[in-house]
Image 1 (spheres, protein in one colour):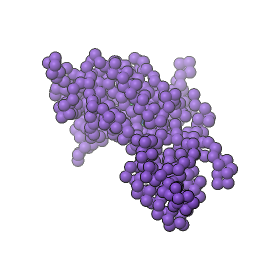
Image 2 (cartoon, protein in one colour):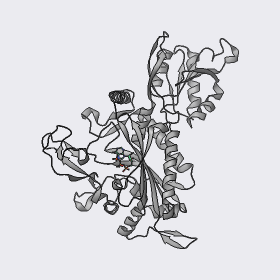
Image 3 (cartoon, rainbow, N blue to C red):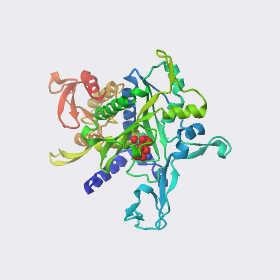
Image 4 (cartoon, rainbow, N blue to C red):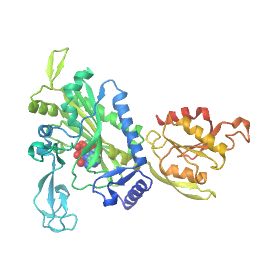
Length: 453
Ligand code: ATP
């Protein structure tokens, strides 16, 4: 259950995201559009760090996975064959009193009487299917023949290109195809900030295998994915694995785990790890009339592979990273009086900016010049931020609030004015412990890279 302090925490997170340029409402100057969000200068960095790291772990560090980037619009036949046109819908109920449109499972049932959770009204329509796909038209005419949908998941592009990718990559089972990209769902109740959006990004892997390996690989991928979250700084204690019961699974799915995160608004799904059997490839083979079979050179057998799918949401993971990182602690101000410090404790791998670089005084040409040299030195390796305005404590605080793990200050010791042995060393400050140590400029890049890669 979420508590009032959880909802306050969420309000603070949303306000920080807006104030510091992580996430804004889309088309805000026109009143916004429900369920759609824009990522600002820091949000886009966080998002890219997450997607790049996912790609590194899931594709570059493995021999058995290759990537692809499919188009968002596909032939409508894809969505007919996949079952999305027919079944990708939520049963919806309208409240005739307050006009709210509700998912049928949100309607309150009081001793057999259905009640609107919004206004308490009892005048509700029967549940009706509401398809979650956005329709659009391709070409000059707007009729049935030119209609298709914005993809509601990235996976189908992988299934329909399975054979082509298999041939060009010369992989043998088991092997996977990974993709990161936008997906669109006309969600009825977008809510909880970016958690349930109408446009979002997915990071999906379709891992093809022999039928007899399916269950074992499902468990393997669950473990791999849990490791991934720990490696981006999400503690294992905040993650929960839910075994999806048979009655909630698609009829073709043999087993399915949801990886859930303990958000301030409750335990909610971050990623699904599903064993989809050979359903998708079989459907597309049937509908297209093209073979999607795999030929096993050793046994000389032809068959349709099974698939295990870890499917994660970029936006939900970004939100989890921010929720996990948000902290308030006590730190001394300029006059050594303790004050509340807001800090985002991002894992250095995920942090939007890796290092803040500060000359102690902005009106000292030597300090400024040295600090700019350090910017040039670090820039090829990481995203850094140069800041010369305001007291040094304030500059640290501004970086703490956006999660920059390291701060480098160029001071008079760097110039060797007090002690010649300290020439060309800087103060390196750690965001979390606020501890400071002296590091030689020549060793800076190596020291920081050890933590951020
Ligand atoms: P939910 O039950 O929360 O609607 P789902 O089970 O329909 O999610 P999947 O179809 O398994 O979701 O999609 C895989 C992943 O895509 C989800 O785990 C989630 O991270 C992400 N995702 C799905 N729908 C949304 C959405 N509306 N907004 C943001 N991310 C989403």
